[in-house]
Image 1 (spheres, one colour):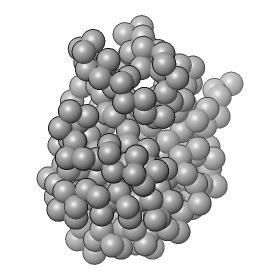
Image 2 (cartoon, helix red, strand yellow):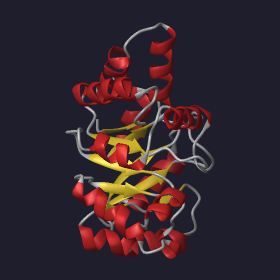
Image 3 (tube, one colour):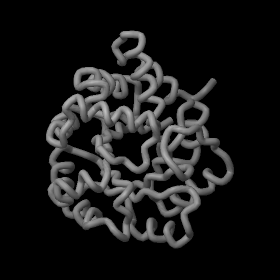
Image 4 (cartoon, one colour):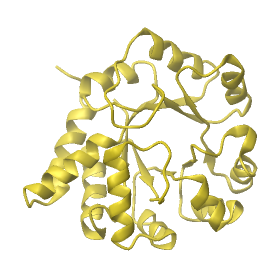
Length: 244
């Protein structure tokens, strides 16, 4: 089962975030989604908001984020928000992503029809730009996503913010199938935290995206005064194995 595992550099600090990245790789995550912290997120639930705020206090900067990305060996997707990307310069940001080997960029508040040149920059530099679309989107929005001919689509299996449990049923499975109907690889998440959910999602999507569950695993390890490596490794192994 393909898992895209979400992590935040400098959370809970730089060294421990490196241990988290190592555990994701060793546990069998197909992709690592690295979130560059931003002070005004729009789609993050309380767990990820708290983690990104903490990463900023630990010294995260965009330049140090690129240095972190350069150390990763699994395919990396980079997620952040428009304010950070625009402040750096869209073209410059995408060029840096290409330079550091990023597979794709996810910027949920730069939609296709108001993207400040993000998709064009992705074409120039050979970086996949992922359209982000949520369950309940209109047929016109879905058609617009299809017209991008993007290799990957990032699908939110419900509206709102991350972190709340999502039930996988006929409605969101149909949504995944529609998004993948023209050959795109659908990366589907929001509220996915168990192997059973991953199995249900990946029966139809290319990969399941896991975020808040990893933040909680890191925090629980910290509360026990433990290296997060083992907790994150065990969670990743649980999520990537078919339930028996």
